[in-house]
Amino acid sequence: MADIEVSVRDLVDRDRDCTEKALAQMDLRRKINLLIGEWKAAGGGDVLPNVRDRVRLRPGKSSDHPLRVIARR
Image (cartoon, rainbow, N blue to C red; front, top):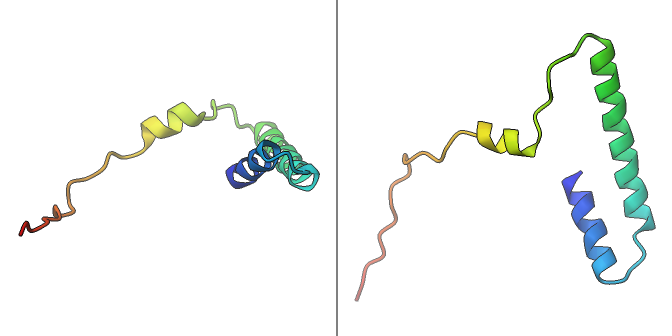
């Protein structure tokens, strides 16, 4: 969905027709709303995470990767 949002913004910024992409974006939002409605009807009552919550829940970068050393000449 984020890809479609970016493409719609890009088309709008370039003053191009974004009808097809915008309709696809609205269709995806409609499907997500239906899924959330079904989830709630099935007893789902938890608060769904927003973007800020999801970023906070991501694991931090690990230092398992060795540092890349660039040799000077």
